[in-house]
Image (cartoon, rainbow over all chains, first blue to last red):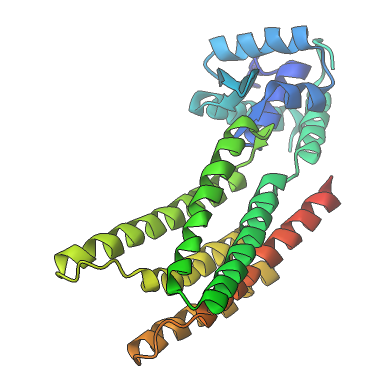
Length: 94
Length: 207
């Protein structure tokens, strides 16, 4: 029987954010916005959801006089992503 | 990108698209750092050589401590400009250079304090030049190996050779001469300037 795809990851924007974070150590909000072409509001909502699930770590800091929001994938997030990929493979028979 | 339901096939497309977009493994920052330190070292080396040559006073060798000032300024500026993305490679290269920096710091402390332990009461910094040449060449070679660039991996071997020759000449008793300042400027060409130009060009090609 096929396992259900993790609904927290199986969303266009959240999956894009998780994939982006998987390939880097850390990235900031502006880069996520640039890479996903989504609106700031939408990204903020999805980051909150992923952060509440413990999949990502959000850090807010000041760099010079500007505020900077950066995100990082957690170990739980990495495991959830791997599981999502395994389930996706079984759905697509690959 | 919107928040909507989508199929499994579409999720594969999103994963491939995001991976394609983020396939950037060299950051602009590393190239800039190599170039800034490369040019500074050449300038300080040439200035020290000329000052010692013209005045005949070896006290001008202390001009090398200007590099400490350049490092402090660069670190302060660096804190104000964080890159938008830090890749795993950026972090690993950063850690390699943190180790190299620590080795250099430890060496300077030991050299400075050993004068008192051995009762000489004179700090003799001549050894820092060959040691720095060796440390820099190891750091740059490892960086080249990590970013898979043969020129950056092999080029520092010339600097390593200069460092070893300096050490051997100290053993033979010939030791430090004013020309060492120029040799060290050459070390920075192989360990910083050439790698910096290569990394900058690579980054410009990606973007």
